[in-house]
Amino acid sequence: MKIIEVIADESYIDSIKNIMEKNSVPDFWILSSESEGRKVVRILVKPEQRQTVLDALQGILTTSFSYRVVVIPVETALPREEAEGETEIISATETTREELYDSIGKNARLNQTYLLLIFLSTVVVAIGLLKDNVAVVIGAMVIAPLLGPNLAMALGTALGDTELMWKAFKTGLAGMSLALALSILIGIFWPLNIESRELLARTYVGLDSAVLAMASGAAAVISLTSGIPSILVGVMVAVALLPPAATLGLMLGAGQTDLAYGAALLLAVNIVAINLSAKLGFLIQGIKPRTWLEKKKAKQSMQSYIIIWVLTLAALLLVIYFHPDFIK
Image (cartoon, rainbow, N blue to C red; front, side, top):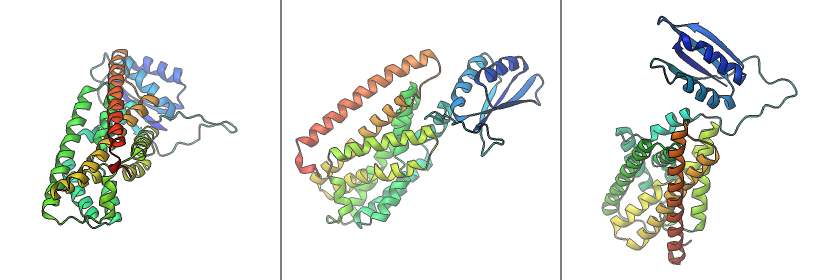
């Protein structure tokens, strides 16, 4: 459970009470605020109630310019609300739209920390690939700075937030460009170990690669919406974008254009499949805007982007089918 803390003018208290009674929240209490005429209301809510209560609160507080709504995590609450012999039904989506936006939206920020993570993880994964060291490659996968912008772009599509989509696109493009440029330089000045199994594994792509990326993208969405972040570690390792990007750069730097073509196909399939499955995942999980106008915009953008990604993935699979030399 969590606590929703509302700071609003005293005139809104009756409306807030009505929302709490209508949703049968476990408990609530009202405190005084230091500001005259304002009250602090703390509402203890179950996971499946959070989004409904937040939407209702925003609906009545939109006319206020001085309100604040804060979601506070709760480690435990006693006594337990579940009655003996009853089974509590919890919705699959336990993370609210606002919480998702805050956590995933951070990954769309193009800042010094993000670029530094791209730089360091590219160096680490390049060394791991060239030295054929699987432990080092996995270590770079867990950093996974390129996964965040793709998930942020999928969330932006689900919410119809063009600003978030554009920010995520620019951040992902900047990170990918830096990773490619750096790995090309490493490929030019560092002798290429063409016998490295870790390196060669990223130069082949098949239908299983697309299925893996689709499944991993969906698992990432489930992890985020269900509040189980530990799943993300497995997603990062299963379908990391950085190793094929680094392989592409290394091969280009060393002049191995044929192998670079295979790495480029793998990278493209992973990016498209992750975005497609993440968008479908948010759609299935019911992540959508609050107002009807935003829902209309989100529905249009979601349909357009899903069609684009499906056609792109189909085109890539056709390229793979007609170039069996790159299928493993």
